[in-house]
Image 1 (tube, one colour):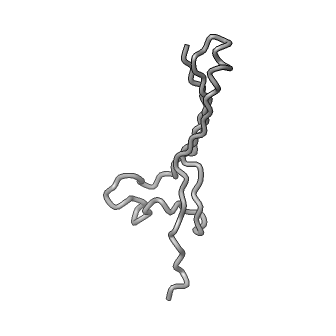
Image 2 (spheres, one colour; image 1 turned 135 degrees about the horizontal axis):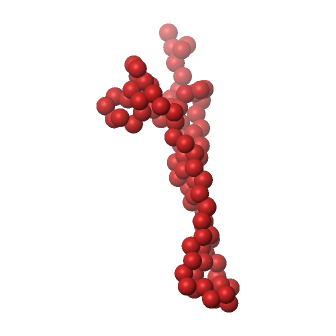
Image 3 (cartoon, helix red, strand yellow; image 1 turned 90 degrees about the vertical axis):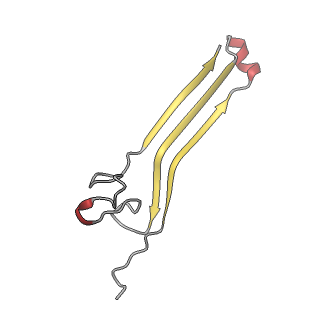
Length: 89
């Protein structure tokens, strides 16, 4: 009687950062000692065979987790992408 069973395996990309520090020779010409450009992403992807439900959470009776308090029937974590520039003079 396992025709209703679905694999709960998943791969989650929670945090990823790409950054580049420009060479000092290039930025020193404009009076900066260090210039770094970066992009950070949080909760970027969840790869799973399950359809329509986030496998990272326990949707038990009433939608509550078993004592952890992480999820009480709410939506999955929001995807966030942030970009920035770090300067040193």
